[in-house]
Length: 270
Image (cartoon, rainbow, N blue to C red):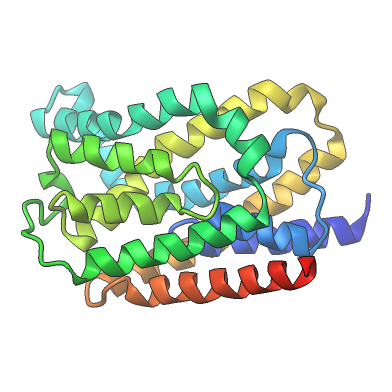
């Protein structure tokens, strides 16, 4: 087994964990770093999808009390728990339908550094625009999010299938546009990530799992563990940060990175 390949997987796992929940696009960063490291992720891009599950499990761990409370409440048919689960489901369904139809095409056509760079810039401009708008907050906490707000967030998540857009960025900004507070939108983005990424990981493994070698599984395991550990750190940081700050710093980072990448790409082609 190639040690350098495992080191690259280790680095990409850290990149995934650090970027999955920040509005900067984990998929975009994985594509960029993978291209920079000349990392061959193998059949069907399974590595990129499955290591995201490591980051999602970090959310499950940090919010385990809330998740257990909701699951127990659902068994007791508690209205509040059933409502919360229903709201997450409503936000989850649009990306499922769209993903089943278009995800393969998106991977084949849009998974490249140029698309990532353009998406980073456009996404950053949208974040700045939303943050500078005055908007009434109708859902101050995650439990206050309504059905139409959840549907709006779910539709926003569809856009994040374009690499460079950012799933967390799309859902947080989508929530804010529909009257959810920044903190509540961020937390809801965490909960929405659980079924979204578990579903994507299971689907990819079902399609390509039989073709994975033992070496592929070890590589995925390395990225999975490092993504989990680094995501734990980021989730704790992000919740504290958004309680007192806007997302503008991430917007400017996206714009700067995207412009640098575009200049580099144009320079290489000139």
